[in-house]
Length: 150
Length: 33
Image 1 (cartoon, one colour):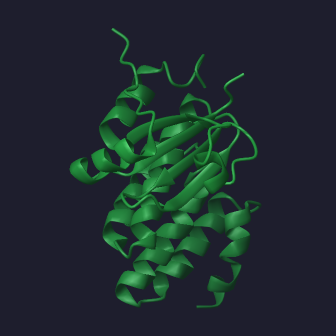
Image 2 (image 1 turned 30 degrees about the vertical axis):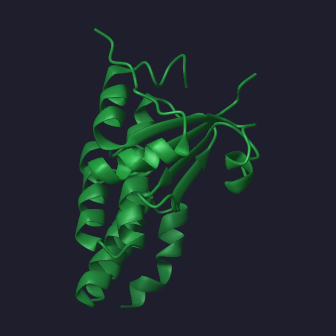
């Protein structure tokens, strides 16, 4: 991450603008115990109260880190019931990082967020149809499979 | 010119900034060896 990802201009500007970056050695106690860190890099998104909402483990390249952080920010909004803010984050992933590994979860979460904010189940079906059309063998198409019946 | 990430090194200060600036925290546990 230090050699490739963090020096990237787009990555560093995104991080400085959108999150508070915090770096801690994985053996520092008690925080590494509190977060049950077993392998590095462990990349965690916390809300303003310190509650965890998203975690990845392992190296992330320049093309994956920004959408992964956006997914974490979106999931923090989602977990706090801020569905439109979550949808906005997921839309950035879908529109700006369509080749990233985060996009399938973003599509799924968009459907769920739209459902939870409107109680209209059709966005769930739309999420399944998009996932099944574009990523038929992906895990998120499988998770959305029941929504085909809506 | 390269922009460097302005890392915090303590959770308390990071959460203070998170509340002040209305942003989440991106916490990177790295291998120190």
